[in-house]
Length: 394
Image (cartoon, rainbow, N blue to C red; front, top):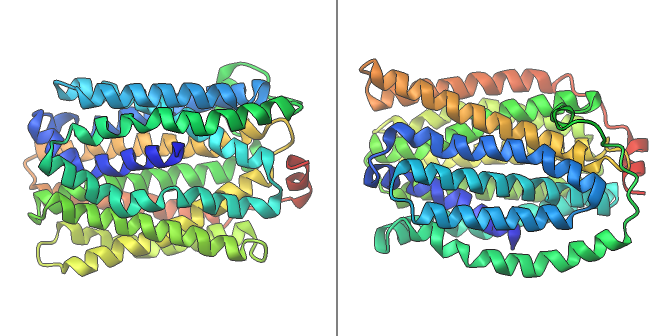
């Protein structure tokens, strides 16, 4: 429930943001709605990681749900785009804390053979949001107003707390912590050396993929003249394909090295990403857009799940929070920097007098270049050391 609520918010806000920007006269802050979320999420992740390794999972889950719910309320009642950005900032702190706790829980509580299945089950929490999130958000925005895409989710946050907090509290009481995650907060921002390359790959891929997803609805509605519902369907295709790839990968994860899965996923994603420019080509068939986003989701689903398994396989007992949060932090930083930089690139194009379609082409071209760099780095990923993987699940 906790992950599903966060997933619904993430996917619905993508499809309704063009309406929000028009209603609040805040197109200049369009990129900040997403960058603010990712920046604060990135700052929250290492803090949550240290709390997890020292004190357990209960406090991060409780704090994450509370802040996320508060952010939904602020965004739902926002009188201006600046206030809405503030609500997204609160949501980012809550989501980053929940993200760190969720992945650390999988690394702490499950054996290496079980982790792939658990990650696939976790991605299933995105399944219903992927199908109905963008469509539901677009429909609610057109019928009841975009504010209810935030306010309608706030009521589910207490339910998520009732479901998850007793379980993690019981686990905390049983768990004997042997934390080695001491040191200043800034130290936890730097991933352990052995997983540094995986973190960098995740950061670059996250900046490109999430950046492209952020600006795709703007191209479909502003250039092609399609509805927010049609834009939402495209995002849903990417999400469903991403989840499907996670399930397919978990079935073969014990036979395929994580390194090889990372290589395949990143290479496939880089090859199909040029198809995304169809969102700014008025003559491109709508079916081609859906197919392009689905293919992107397939490659990304394999790559990101393999990266998570790679990192969990190298987590030493007592530092699972820091290890798993390192790649989540890198992914979040990439998304924050990517949306901020791409937003600046888009605004620079518009300020220079370029058409919206041309400015968006610059954005998607930059995304492709970053994915190529991430793919090159993926080919140097070392094999996972199974001995450490076993230690992490002892």
